Structures are given as C-alpha cells and as structure tokens.
Amino acid sequence: MADLRTTVAGISFRNPLWLASGIWGESGNSLKGAWDAGAGGVVTKSIGSEPRMGYPNPTIETYDNWGMLNAMGLPNPGIDEYPQEIGVARDAGATVIGSVFGADADEFARLGERMAATGVVALELNLSCPHAKGLGSEIGQDPDQVREVVSAVKRAVRVPVIAKLTPNHYDVPLLAEAAEKAGADAISAINTVRAMAIDARLRRPVLAHGSGGLSGPAIKPVGLACVWQIFERVKIPIVGMGGIETADDVIEYLLAGARAVQVGTAVAFEGVGVFRRLGEELTRRLDALHVVQVADLVGAAHGAPAAP
Ligand SMILES: Cc1cc2nc3c(=O)[nH]c(=O)nc-3n(C[C@H](O)[C@H](O)[C@H](O)COP(=O)(O)O)c2cc1C
Image (cartoon, rainbow, N blue to C red; front, side, top):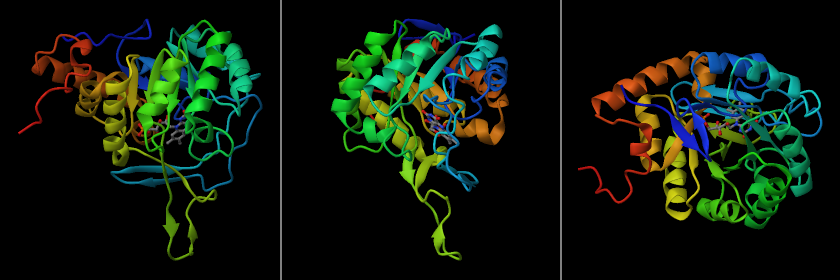
C-alpha cells in the first residue's frame, strides 16, 4: 500500500491532507474533529491580537459545483483565549499548525511567539486575506513587507514558519522568493482569489463587505499555476491549496510541486468526512499508478512533456 506520509519543513505528517485555515478550525473540538476524521495536519483559524467580530452578514455565498465567495473579516477570539482550544486539539494527538495575522512585523512577531508557546508544530503567517483592511494581502502583496514580517517572526520563534501567499499579485513567485530570503521554512499557496457577486434584482453587492475571496473548484487552476511557478523559483517546500475535492486534485498539486495540500471549501460542503474519503481515494489511486510514496510525485510534472 502506498505510503502517504510526507515531510514539510522537517516535520513529519501522517498524510499530505491538511485542514485549511478558517474552515472548521475555530475551536479545539473542531480541529480535533478534522484530525479524528483523518486529516494529516490541522491549521487553526487565523488568530489576531484582539477578539474580532468580523463583518456583518451576509459574509458567505455558495455556488453549487464551483465554490464559495466569502468576506468574513477575520472573526476570531483573539490570542488570549485561543491557547486552550489548541490544548484540546493537542490532547487528541493532532498535529496543529497555528495561523496568525497582524498589521505589521512587530505584531506578527508578538503573535507568533504567543502562538508558538501553545505547542503548535509550525506557524502559518496569513499574509494573504483579500478582504481585511490593513491586514492580510495588503501586507502580503508587498515583497518588502513580506520580508520584514517573516524575518521578525523567524527571530521570535524556533518552530518552522510557513508564509501563506495571496494569488492576487502579478508575480506570486516574487513574494515566495521574498519569504524564502527572509528565512521562511515553507510556502502555503493560495489564499482566496479576490472576487465579488452582484445581485441584479437588488442592484447591490451580494456580500455586505462588497468584494470578497473566491474559493473552491473554480480556483483550482489558479492554485495549480501558483504552486507550479513557485516550485520553479524557490527551494523551500510548498503546501498547495485551492479547490481540492478529489484524490486526482491532490495528485495534480503534488505533481505541480506541493509536498502537502490543504482542503477548505470541500470541508465546508462535505464535512470533515472528506479527509477519510480523500485518504482512501488517494491510497487507491497511488496503488493503481504504482506510486510507492507521496514524495515520488512532488514536482514530477516539471520538465515532463505535456500530455498528448
Ligand atoms: C469561509 C472561509 C474562511 C477563511 N478563513 C481563512 C483564515 O482565517 N485564514 C487563512 O489563512 N485563510 C482563510 N481562508 C482561505 C482558505 O484557508 C484557503 O486558502 C482557500 O479557501 C482556498 O482553499 P479551498 O479552495 O480548498 O477552500 C478562508 C476561506 C474560506 C472559504
């Protein structure tokens, strides 16, 4: 049977299927639920310095078959409240990655230190939320700020640091290079794609915030292209995401260069059972393809001739 284990930034994961930040990961019990259902790692909701309510409703619009539009506004309980939630997930044996967001390098470093102290195996820096003023991708679209934030966090913590990038930039690999130069141990790509919907009958945006971020199957080609290009420009490991719903989606991301993947919208649509299903499907697919281990597929499509 194919070996699903994978290693990212020196950490061993039981399989490459992680819960993505912001979907299902708000409480310790929900992180535990995803772990118990078979996720190889669980990423927390992005946590900030203070509790945040997020935007007023409507914050989410779903589309059958192709995805979800959201502008949640980073609601979260704040770092003072969160360590106990991570405790619940860690007591269940979960491999937890702590996601944080901030307004500048100092805030990221302070939060990173607090998050690392909870016992997470790695930090994921949310440099990429497309709809939070002064946070997220407003920082993450500027290579200099990416460098500053990553350097500051690296100085503050000992756990591996993963920089999560936005696809909303003309040269995403440039952002990855900035993160790598600053000492990032891995890259996560991608966060949601900036998007909006308008209600023609009401003559106004569907989401209260106006624009938001698109996720789900519609963005899989965008995520794949980002992972592909990043793989060609940096040496650090990549965690790929965007629209993963099937084992073949996972395999495509691995072939593009990801060592692990994250699943978000499919969890929202299907529940955490998606991890058991994907794990079983992936094992069957790899066995059918005579692939012995996940590592054998990582980046394997590069340099290969295009499919006929
Ligand atoms: C409702 C919702 C909330 C999200 N919240 C966060 C968040 O707090 N932090 C973060 O880094 N990404 C957040 N994301 C982005 C996801 O982690 C992921 O990068 C994106 O949705 C693409 O993966 P998917 O197509 O599998 O959903 C959120 C996405 C959705 C749909």
